[in-house]
Length: 356
Image 1: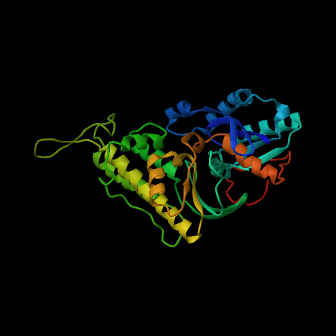
Image 2 (image 1 turned 90 degrees about the vertical axis):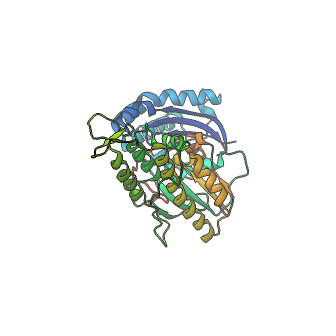
Image 3 (image 1 turned 180 degrees about the vertical axis):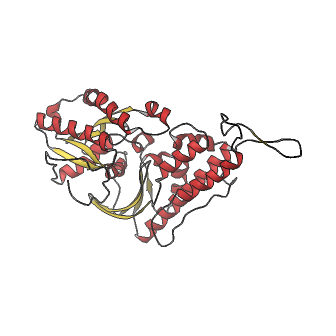
């Protein structure tokens, strides 16, 4: 039995978890900063890093207490070293290095994108089979990756502009919905019609890449038709269109726009993943990342996929440390150790350009 302490601070969630053998979660503590950043409509990097400093030690202590273990029970400390916000990553990496050094424990570095994929190993079913096509969709990433074994990846493609989650946040702001945009759009879409607006899909033929800037602009153009004339009005309030005839009141159709936008994004994500699975004869599709918690995406992928689909529960899709501990276990078992000179790599990709 190998117990790994995972530490995650790549963005705005301070997290620590204890996981056995990469599969059994004993604790998974997350201190969220969503309420802090909501006032800015997005992540404020300097605020995020300062909050990590305040939260990280209490979060680690709580994760050990919930797992009912001591430092002597741990085999290693695993930490996210990229990609992510530089200031946020530095907090987690430096604390992990200090704790590992002080307790005489090995240190394992984990790629944040890889960690999201390993959320699929924390589900109480037989582990995924290889090869698998992994769709990683979050606020910062939209990647299609072919996984042929533990630590063996081929990047098939990714977004050329906005990540899917970033597009959700930006469209959410256009519609006057609260941050984060993903959950808000999903909720608003429940009352809408997915075919109400014909929004563009960027298929980018003969590639496994994505683009979401066009659909974002299309929503903007629609919203501008309803934009209020007087300053101080919100886009969800009526706009009076002046003419010779009696005034016509137009209200932004938030629910229909949300449903149509969500449907267009999901359509592209599902279809391109399905095609990749067929092309590379994958034995399964693995969903990962915060956007993988979207109910419409999960349902459509299950319905249209030619192979079995796996997706972690929503709490393991968003940033957390259990996924870091899981990925760290498999790297630890492969004999990988990070040096004490480990540094953060904010722009890290998967496969990584170089070993840490």
